[in-house]
Image (cartoon, rainbow, N blue to C red; front, side, top):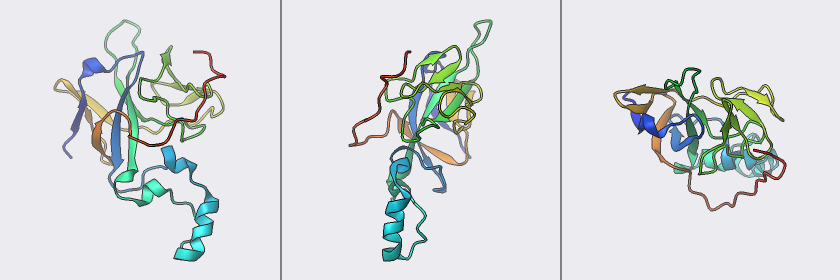
Length: 182
């Protein structure tokens, strides 16, 4: 597989995230974003009409170009100040997977942890493990990247690069951060 260049390494920092879009190559991506809002009830209602088994299949997993997901890049901090490793995660909190960590202006990062501004969950930047909050013990979904030849490259056979920035949506962000102190 030819890796796709995502960003310049200088654009990836230790105190903010870099947002881009990917698409699952085989369509078996974990449901997230708007897909996570679809309920089993609506799938069951439609099962009788189309012969389906009643298991929820998110709308954005059924349609052609709607399976685009957001991902975030983050540079790990090092003790001696050198440039650390670049890591990549799908841009969805594991507490409520329709909630994005980076809403388009960078996710907050403090002391090596990505903060979900909605419910205060903390995710270790190096492992993606939730260390505090309502989804403690859960892990962010990792995407393989590598830094080489002056760029950060997508290096994951399960995804293809779509573009920089957030997924465009007509939906309003109904999330709240009123209970989080950043």
